[in-house]
Every structure is written in C-alpha cells, then in structure tokens.
Image (cartoon, rainbow, N blue to C red):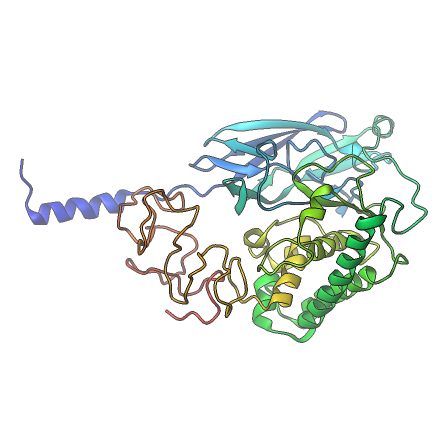
Length: 441
C-alpha cells in the first residue's frame, strides 16, 4: 500500500510524539538490618541502560571505607575507617561492577567496625551521593545513588565486641620512617608543590574570578568563599609545616589497604595520610585541567583530615563531572572539589572538561593534537564509533543519545546537558560549563 507524502509526514510526527526518553541512570540502595550492627545493602540499577561503575569507596569495596552515614540524635557519628583517592584512568576490571537494567547485587558489612557504637541506643543509617561510571576503564561521568533511612536500636555490648577495622599504630613522628631515600625527596617536593598550589587557590577563593569559583562551589557569597579559602590556607600551612603539623604521613602502606587503583588514603579519625605505590607514578604537577598529580592528591587527602581543618571533608562527588554537579553545601564538604579547584586555579582552566588550558595549542585530551577553536569533533576519540570520518559531527552509536537516534542526527531528542531553550537542529548548548568560557550561541 502506498502512502501519500502528507500521510508519511503525519506518521513521522506521531512516531516522534510517542517516543519516550530513556530513564535516567541511577542506583537505588535498600538498607536492612541483618543483626545488631551488621547491615545488608541491595544495590539496584533503576535506569533503562546497562551501566559500569567504580565500586571502590562504595558497596562491594572490601576496604573499611565509608559506605553509609550514621546519626545519633541528628548528630553524625565519627567515621573511623579510610577515605581513598582513586585513579581516574586505567582502572582494573576488579574495581568495576556492571549492572543491567533492573539488576541488583548485595553487600554486607558491620557498621561497628568503622564507628564507635559502644554507647548503644538508637542509630539512623542513610547514604546518598554520586558514583563514578566508566568507559574503557576510565571515569567518564557519574550517576546518583540514595538509600532509605534505616533506624536501629544498637546493643552496646554486642557493638563493643566487634573488632575495629583499623588498629592503632605508633605515631611518634609526623613524617614516618617509611619516607626515606627517593621517596622522601618525592614527598618533600610534592608537599612544597601542594603548599604553593593550595595557597594560590586560597587567594583565588578569597578574591579571584567568581565565575571560576562558582564552577566548583556554586555559591559565591562571602561566607562561602571565606570558608573555602580558610580550608585551602590550612592545607597550604599543613603542607609547609616540615613535619610539625597535625597529620602523620606514610610513604608506604602500613595498613594494607592500597591496591592498583588507589593513589592514597586518609584515616580522618587519626589524621594519618598514606601514599600508595600508584602515587609515585603520578606527575608532580600536571599540565592537564582536572588531571591527577601528586600535589593535588595531597590537597585532596589533607582536606579529609579534621586536624588540618575541621570537620574533614567527604567523598560526595569524585571527578570533575560529579564534583561540579554538587550543591553548594555538598561541594564545601567534598574533597575533590578543593583538589579540582586548586588545579583549575593553578592552570587557569576556564570550564573545559580536560586537557591543557584554553589558549594553548593542542594538548586537549578529548581532542586531537590539531585542535582549533571552533572544531566540532575530534579526529580520534574513544567515544566515537569505529566508522568515524573526519568532519563527522556525531557517532553512529552513542549511549548518550536517545532511543530514536538516526544516522546524521546532530543532537538528541532529549538530553539533560542541553539548556531549556534547546531547539531541534541546535548543535550545542547555550549554557554549558564544559564548553569554552567565551562560547556564544
């Protein structure tokens, strides 16, 4: 049967109108009590697509990391485990979990192993935040997660019988005897760099660009800027303390919690910082916006330590995408927000998603070495399909595009990164923090 041109057009419109956007990716956490302080978490992919994410610093991590927050009478109970900084690229498969739509996995853990619950009584358990998602074993974005509130009545005697995950060490010196030879030199240089970068970032937080500050901390009011500046000044002071500060630093792992994906970690309850082997493979100071290096790893870890500036920060959003999606209050409490802001100030980054600062030739990690302002695609880019040709403005297959994607389409039908004034045919957002700061529609 033949259709007239008008009928074909009507069918096309109807088809487009009936098309539904894909359900946004997210993880739902269901917490339940196994017995006393032992908790079970069921992690479910509530989105419509398969996702691969980093489960370190999250459920399924065997290290004593912070999986949940505990509250007694609306006051958070001190966490006595570790807070890790992870590598952003080259993650091992053992660090990743893949979940199909609707799929779940379970993790059991004892909250008394990373918190002093010997007082007993009512405790409320809850968690929320962002978990990094990966492409080709590299952190490429984030998805949110949240849980129910679980109320417990803790038996004090049973909680006291649970062994602490971290056993205290003799901390007689600030920079420990593990820091000798080459590693002592590497650490001392990294501390000097961290002090310089943190001090520069503190000045920028106090009186620098409000646009750059807002990119990381959202709110540019005086008290917020003062708070950020004060923490960064404290970090700079700690890094330049020459062993007389509040933290104890290990150049190798005395507790055994480093692995091939962990750069360093902090024990906030004792103000101890530990470098992992991976730390020594980093550049001292990176030339890439939002890249990882030794200096900003120290900044990240020192913000975790309440002895440097109380209270210590959390890991609420890891990496640029997640950190810049946080609210102002959460950004103030997020370690990576400070490390990323310090990196951006040091390199004069202006809103791009990676690579060298704008104004330099080439060097943008998402773009090839021949990048020119105004170029609309990379010549080589892992997110593009194998049939990419120079001049192509979209992939043949791309998970960020909606289900009605057609070859030649230059934008999604529904896409959360686009601004409210999006029009069909528009090939870029009108406002988008990952675009160059001088972008105009």
